[in-house]
Amino acid sequence: MNEEQGPGWQRWVSSRHRASRDPATGEWQIESWRLHERSNSGPITVRAYVEALPDRIYQDGLEAIAGSRGSDMAVFELEDAGEVHVFAMRCVLLAQLPEIVAMALTPRAERQAIRAAFPLYREIMDAPRFSWGTPAYRTACQNLGIDPDDGRPEYRREDGALVEALENWIIDPVRPFSTDQMHVGQVLELIRIDRQPSPTLHDEVRRQLPLYRRINLPFLTEIERRIAA
Image (cartoon, rainbow, N blue to C red):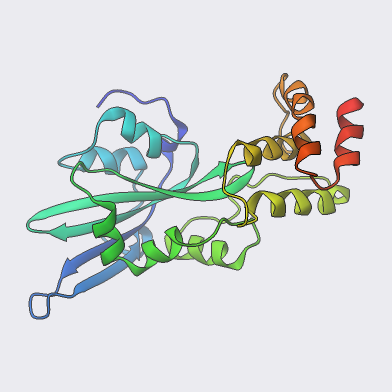
């Protein structure tokens, strides 16, 4: 495998969830564990796990999930007819909010088969969008063995009401996810204090002011004031 550039390759595999058929009933039997809970299996990086797979998807697809900037990665392994089909799941930052994504690591892994075998996978994938404090999100991270605050932006205390209003607008289930949410997320990116915004971000947010006015974004006057500063 070629050397990948994505930072996700150096993260850890946080947990493994394995499904196999009960030979007597034909029902799925699920076993879940975090790697440090097995005496014969220490921590393993995402890269080492993927390289050990006997078969894997095309390189660009691997980079999209294994190399992505995000949390540690959980894996769902389905034993069926002598093969092991694997899906990976990790949390990434989308519009400055957590988004748990899943993608196949092996070429014949089918999403519907993974859904049918793993109740945890279904529960997480069927949940509405999260904010950082959503109990369902934090429970999902606990079950996946990942830190729910990994990558969480930091804001000034006095911006708490503004941040909460924008986050709630982004995750409101009445709005299908679109570029509008991404543009609102740029405001959150601009005001976070744990890292410097890109040199072009201020102008990008300014260009979206007509959108913010059209959608009647909360705290619009405050956003306009900051952009004008």
